[in-house]
Length: 484
Image (tube, rainbow, N blue to C red):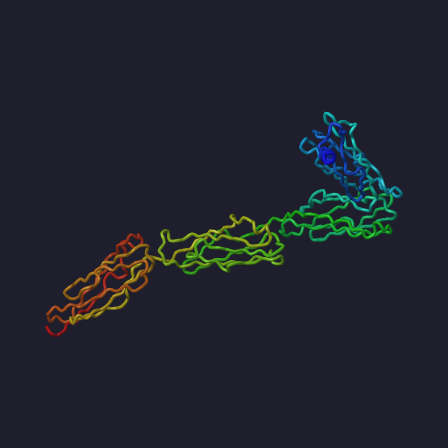
C-alpha cells in the first residue's frame, strides 16, 4: 500500500513540472505577421499650429525604410518624413510629429477638417500592402500667420516688409493696431490692419521704414508692436499676435577729426594747441584720450575729453607743451608723436582705428653745452696756507663724464686740487669745487698774483669734448705772511 502511494506522488510531481512556462519576448516567431506597429491611428492638430505625436516600430526583425507624408500639406505637416529601421532597432519606437498649419480651409461652418498621414514601408518583405494611415482631425482655432521680415532696414534708405493674415475665418471684423517700439529707429506705413470674413486668408503687408538718426549708434534692434486684436468674434478679441523684430543697420561712419597733423613746441615751455571733434553723434559718451610718445619732451593736457550726444559736433581743445630735458641734443630738436585712444560703449567708436590721426610734434632745443666757471672776482689766498674755492657746473646734462684739467700758472704761489675735475651726468648742475691753496715762499715779496688755468674739456660726449670753459683762468692773490 505504501508503494502505491509513492507512485501516485511521483506522477503528480512529474506532471506538475511541465515545460517551465512560455517566455515573453519581442522576438518574432515564424508565425508573426509582418507590418508596422503604431501607438495610435488618430491624431489631432489645429490651424493655430497645435501638434500631436505617435510612435512607430516594426513587428518583425529586419531592415525597413518608411516614408511619411501628409495627404494635405496645406493643413498639416509631418516630421520626420522618413524612418529607418534595422535588425538592431526594429523594435525600438520612433516618434512622428504632426503639426497643423495656418491654412485657408478653416472657413465659417467648417470648423474641422480631416487629412491623413500615410506611412509607406519599403524592404524585401514590406510593400504598400503594409502601409498604415493615421487619420488627423484638424480643428479651427483663431491664430495669426506672420511672416519673417523681408530683410533689415538701413538708415541709408532701404526699407523692409512682413506679411500677416488670419488662420481661420472670423465671424466679424478683426482689427489689429500696428506701431514701432522706437520711432527714432523705424516707423510703419500703416497704424492698423483689418481682416474680415472675406479677406481673412489674404496676407496684408506691413512696410517698415528706417530712420536716419545721424548717430553712430551701431545696428539697433526695435520691434513692430502688434496690438491685441479687437473684434466682436470672441475667438479673436484680445488675442495678441507676436511682435516682429527689426534691425536698423547704421549708416553713420564713426570717426574723429583732428585739426592738425604737425605742431611745434620748445624746451623753453613753448606750447601749441589743436582741436578734436566727432564726425557723427554717438548714442552714448565717447572719451578721447591723448598720449605723448615721450613725456620728457612734450606733455599733452587735459588727460582726456568727453563728447556726448549733445556736444559731439563742438570742437574741444588739447594743448601740447614742450619740456626742457637739459640735454644739448644731436640735431638740436626732438621729434615725438601724439596718439589717441577711445573709450565708449558705442562699438563703432570703441573699435575705431586711429592710426591715421597721429600728430608729429617737434620740440625745439634750447640747451647748449657749456662749462661754467663761477663769476666771482679775484680770490685771495695767503702764505698762511689759507685756501679759496672755485666752483664749476655744466649748462646741460652730458651723456658721459666730462674731465676738466686744472692747473696753477705759478705753483710757488698757489696750488690747485684736484688737478682735473670729473663731472658726471648725475652731478652736472651741482657745484663741483676746485680748492686753491696759497704757498709760503719764505720771501718777503708782498702780495703776488697768479692764475688758476682751465684747459679744454675731454669727453666721449661729442657736445662736451674739447669745449673751452666760459673762463679760461681765474686770477688769485697770494698775500705775504710778513715773516720773511
